[in-house]
Image (cartoon, rainbow, N blue to C red; front, top):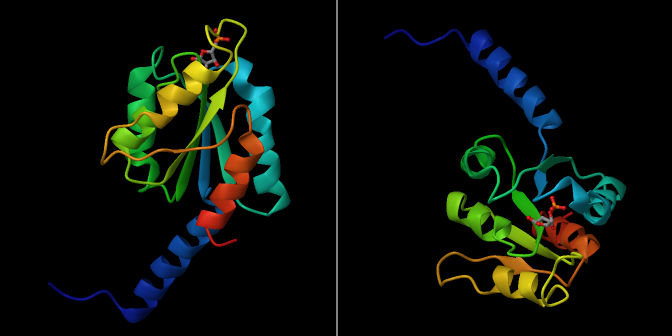
Length: 155
Ligand code: RP5
């Protein structure tokens, strides 16, 4: 097999570098549109720090296949950290960690339907089995998820 001419390699490398410049480093996902106002806190921290990020709504219970696909592809797409916010039976962060070996930061969210004022979501996110880690910030504290992601990235 003949090797590609050096100039071709250089061109391909520079094109890939160009792609990386635009690729988000942090994926912010949440279980419902109703989580958006709170989760915007994480996006604002990342925006202020100049860290590229993207925001998606996907429920671990309502769209399990979408969540699996997103998290399985996350590392390949260049993401370095996943922030996942959910309320009630807050499975999203744990499911993200099940499908990706990237660091996952869970944000427990309060909800008007909560049986325990958000403690239910905190317990759902923190009670992960050994080997499938999820970090957890305080209730509704999406800002701290943004700050923690920035620290993980060394920004
Ligand atoms: C969770 O259920 C979501 O993360 C949200 O916090 C909560 C309520 O969702 P909606 O009924 O408002 O869509 O899955």
